[in-house]
Amino acid sequence: MMSTGRRLADVVLAPLSGVTMLLALYMVFVYVPSDKVQGIVQRIFYFHVPLAILTFVAFGLVALASALFLWRGTRFWDRLAHSAAEVGMMFCTLMLVTGTIWARPIWGTWWTWDARLTSALILWLIYAAYLMLREFSATSDQAARYAAVLGIVGSIDIPIINRAVYWWRTIHPAVLVTREGGSGLEDPRMQATLLVSFLAFAALLGWLLWVRNESARLHDEVEVLHQQLLAEHER
Image (tube, rainbow, N blue to C red; front, top):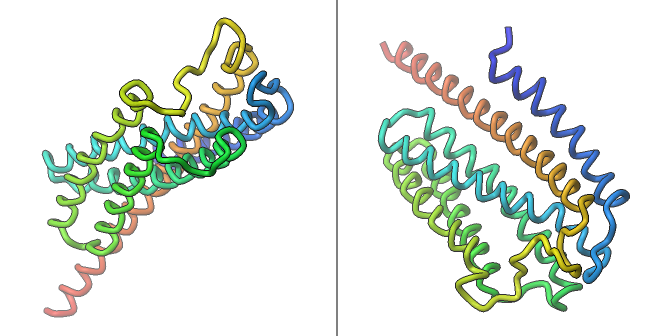
């Protein structure tokens, strides 16, 4: 029989992600009107913003699970942190890519060392270092603890990214909704499209996180059996 977690992931999250993603694509490219200022290129916004928010969620989960691992010392929390970091890196990479694609026609350049963009790149580098540490020290408990500390420290960059547009001069937009016309989500269709896109990516995040975490759990079980067989062989 399937576990509750597997039923939730395979029966709920996977189909929900697929259906809402198809709906989001339809809404982005057919249903929603173009922005009054930025035109059709603004449609990438409906991918970029959910990816950014869920990147923060994933890396926030890394920090939380890492703290619980350091406190409790159980492998469950370490696996969850590692899995969330891998999925978060995928979302963070897509966030940066969609951001540069959006920036090219609007700012006239693929990249600028803007405060928010730079801090987002730093976030990517921190968790890339986290994954490299995990990869090259996969069996070391001490490395897992070092990685947990890095996972916690890295999360400090999340509120910095969020507040960068208020703390420093930046060309990155801060307001999503305007009430006096112009560029923003003043149209209810825009708000609905953003919501559906967010739900699609959130379901995808949940499903990928479960799949990766379950894979890590099975790997641990196989490793335990392997060690037991080696111990039996040496007797």
